[in-house]
Length: 308
Image (cartoon, rainbow, N blue to C red; front, side, top):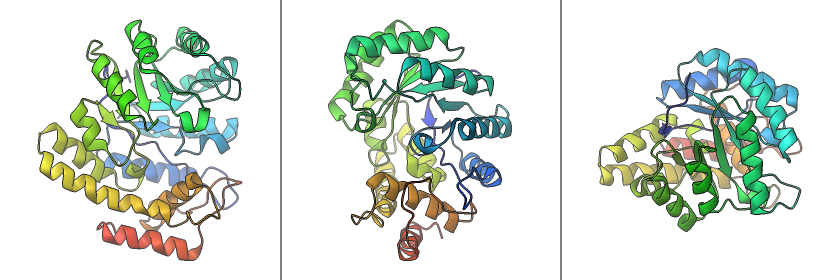
């Protein structure tokens, strides 16, 4: 399908269910997609951070895109990460995800190499020139070690190189600058990647959200989005606070024996397993899985949020 311009609403970054031997669990992936669609989401983003894209082989990445696009069958737009170190490698990913039917590609700045802002701009222009679908920038400085400056994003929006921005930078001032500047570009979409301040982002003028926790509670984020759009700010705040409490599950494994990202992804998958959505809570190697006790802790957060 054609990507809406601007893209609005809740677009979960879809987790990748794995089998115990760390292959893609296709039946569980389909079950997860159904769970998200039943929650009322407006699109799906595969091969991002929550998908564990950095840990997947190219073969597994292709399988995920083909599975999700085939199952959705045009019902909602599917955005696919084309995330790699340099422009030629990103273009390889663009080729196979668009061949598989992705409606847009999501691209970070180059990484590993030390890249100047002018080279980041050139990277996006080269990708957009070769991509048959819209390009959405992914601002993720914690992983790629460079920040997408608001003025650069808006310049690329103005010339039509970028169709949108997924902001996971944590830079509230920079995010606001993009939201404010994007008002001059009505087809450009600004999406927050935060789980915790969706109501604030929408109040600023963001078009939607791409929260990892929406894997666990898609209906909650859809409800939050609709309350904000209806101007029901007190009810929206209460729903956001419920989701903030639920997000506490990401800390059950964050006791120093694993990375914070591993703890969060492990918690999301444990929650999906406890909710009966996926068959196994395995995370990709070399991430450390949650213990039995930690998974029980995730269950307590689910119960507290009314999800068990």
